Length: 327
Image (cartoon, rainbow, N blue to C red; front, side, top):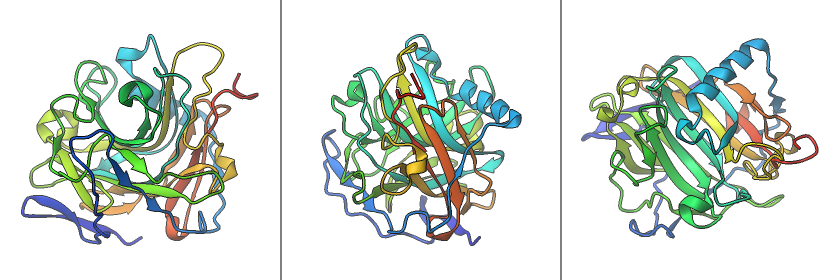
C-alpha cells in the first residue's frame, strides 16, 4: 500500500498528497455557523462485501480494555456508554485519518448524545489515560439542538478532571479563523439519498511534538504536547467509530448511532467510515489494515467492515437503539 508522507513546512504540518483546500465561509465566533461536508464517491464499498464483527474470547478481552479506558468515569453514575468501533493497537501510532459519513442521528433526550469520531489513545488503566478525539456529534445538552456538529475533545486523566469539549477550557489551540469548532455540518446524508462525509486527520508534528487537527484540507489547530503524559510521545491505540451515551437501566434508549440503521443495510442506508488510515513510525499515512471490529451491544448497534477499492479500509456501523433485539 502506497503511503503519503506527512511533513512540516515553516512549523506547520502539511500532507504531501494534499487534498483540495476547503473554502469555508463561516464565522469563528458563532456556534451556529456551518461548514460543508463532501459528497462521497458513488458505488459504496467498491463491491467488497462487508464482514460482520464477532466477539471471540480474545476480542472480549480487548473490548474490556477499551471499555475500561474509554468509560466516562466522571459520569458513570448517570450514563451508560455503548460503542461500535474499529481499532488498531499494539504498535506505535502518530496519528490517524478517515472520512466520516455524517447523519442527523436522533437523540432521545437532552442529556444523551450520539457521536462518530476518531480516538488517539495512550496510557494504561487507572487515572492516566490520554485521549485526543475529533469527529461529529449530536448533543442537545451541549449545543441546544439536534444538529450534527464538528467537535473535539481531550483528556489526560481518563476523563476525570482534565480536558473538555471544543474550546470550553484551555488546551486546544485554534489557528484557523475559517473553521468554527462546534459548527453545524451541512449538507448531511439522507436515507437512500446523497451521502456526505467529512475527512478528519490528526497527526503528531515530529519537530514540535504537537498533535495537529485537519478537516478536509484545512488546518484547524493543535493540542500542545505539554497537555499530555503518554501522548507526549506516541499513541498505542487508534480507534474509529460510534458512541452513544444514555441513562442506565431498562428500557434501552432509542437514541440512534450513525444513521440509526444497522451495518448490514449498507451504502446510502447505514453510516460508514472509509479510508481509515494511521500515521506510522516513519511519519507516513498507511492503511489501517488489520482493523478489529467490536460492538458491545450488537443487538442495539453493530458494525461490519472490509477493505479494497477506492474505500480502502472501511466499515459500516450504527443502529436504532431500542428494538426487538434490544429491549
